[in-house]
Amino acid sequence: MSLKISRRQALAATAATPLLAAAPGFAAGHGGNAPMKLAHTFKLGSMNVTTLLDGTTPRDEPQSIFGMNVSAEEFAQVSEENFIPTDMAQFFFTPTVVDTGADIVLFDTGLGQGGLQNALAEAGVAPDAITIVVITHMHPDHIGGLMTDGQPTFPNARYVTASAEYDFWKAQEAGNRVGDMVKANVTPLAENMTFVEDGASVASGVTAMAAFGHTPGHMTYMLESDGQQLLLIADMANHYVWSLAYPDWEVRFDMDKEAAAATRRRVLGMLAADKIPMIGYHMPFPAAGFVDTREDGFRYVPVSYQLMG
Ligand SMILES: [Zn+2]
Image (cartoon, rainbow, N blue to C red; front, side, top):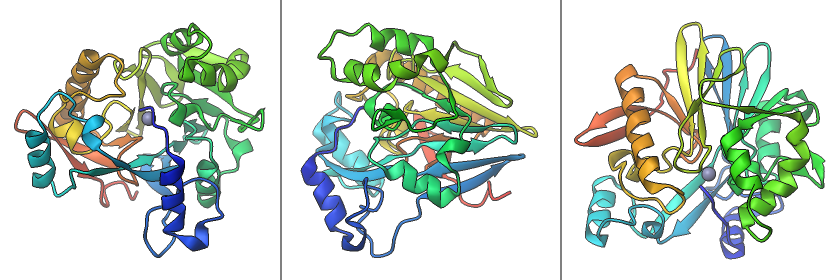
């Protein structure tokens, strides 16, 4: 999703944890007393899969983003039934790094405010160790960390993204906020970028799967190792209650709302039927869960100890 964090929210986030107020980014802004863990490693066959908390921030008026096509009463009822407030939503930004044994693959790069670097350091992964950077789609909270002070943040990486995604954004005229950011952060890397289609193999055990709707070239990525699978869903579903229980609820950041809803039904249905775990970029950290069916929609079941290896 495309999200701007206001200065007010940023200040509120850092003020809640004065000891960490000097740290760049928002990862520390969870309001608790102890520093939050920024990196969480799961085992998937012989792969190490680490989710990285680039940042987290509260947002007011969540129905201006989720459930735009339902009544305030329905939104309130669903929220209360699921033990979450109706007047705020906590957003998480969660790139993932995967050690396949042959490659170190980073999926998305965060807001570009330093949080990802802190999380990678906690995970023990140096930026120059990353061999492939996959961009699931080109909203600012996914491409913000590609460049640092005009230089590639991950100097030894090659890049992978969907051709449909890059083609769409690079055709935008100057003044389009996302298009301008793509020109600044993606275009300088394009000569080192592989543009893929649905079904492309990105690395051993990593396959691109088209999931269009959120953006014109939005991709999910299936990991597979020793017969185990996990789907990185990126922004296919962006809230663990509202987007799963009600896949047809319209989301402001979905550019093609009908296609995004159809994609949610198709992909969530597959995850539920095949009992495949997922990592969602905007799910509550550590952002990994399973999908079950519930009434006409789905239910998110956070991972507990299933992926400890
Ligand atoms: Zn996003």
